[in-house]
Each structure stands twice: as C-alpha cells, then as structure tokens.
Image (cartoon, rainbow, N blue to C red; front, top):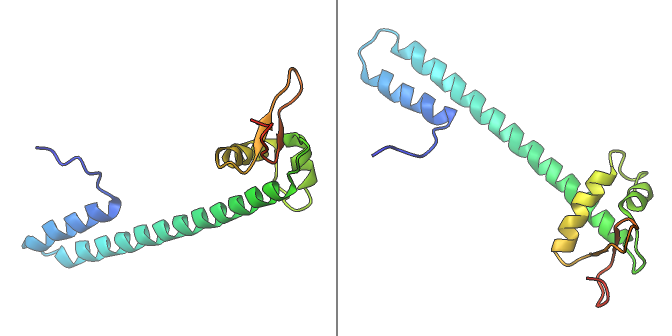
Length: 130
C-alpha cells in the first residue's frame, strides 16, 4: 500500500538524516549538518510566508470592514465604493471591491441588485433587496 501523504521538504531532510545516521559513512556529520541547515531554512521560509499571509488577510479584512461601513440603503456601484475609499486604501480597485462585496453578500452583510442594463449596485441588506 502506498503512502499518499505528501512529504514536505522538512520531512524529506529528516528522512535523509535518519537514513544517513544509520550508515557508517565517514561523511555522516557533514550530511546531517547540511540537512539541519536546510530544515532551518524551510522553517524560516514557512514562518515568513505565514506572517505575510496573516498580514494580507488583516489588510483584506480591514478593507472589507471599510467597504461595509460606507454602504447605505441607497445603491452604490463598485466604482463608486472604490473611489470613496481611494484615499484610505492606495491599492483599492473595482475588482477588489467586487471580491469583498461578494463575501459581504454571502455573509448577509450586504445586498446586490441589478436592474436591466444598469450596473450592479450594492447596499445594506433589506427586505426589498435580494
């Protein structure tokens, strides 16, 4: 039976250390040291990536909250919302607003309405807007 679990770089270097340590080769210490160095680098890389992801998520949450704060019962287009928040968020775009509005609509914190050929508008949820 095959092992279907994906091995990480850390797992691979640990396995190499285990195999090499059991051998009687003269270079065991050098190889183990190399593996320890690679494991430390992989852990450092993973921690930096996790920190960056957490920072990005916090920024995304901040933008989502800001978008939710400016919604009213009157409809606003994604472009209107992006323009209203452009001073607060340098990198805000219509696409980012649409993405976050989708999350807000799914969470029930906003509603979207499209009537005819008019652009999609977003607003606070109400009984009328579905």
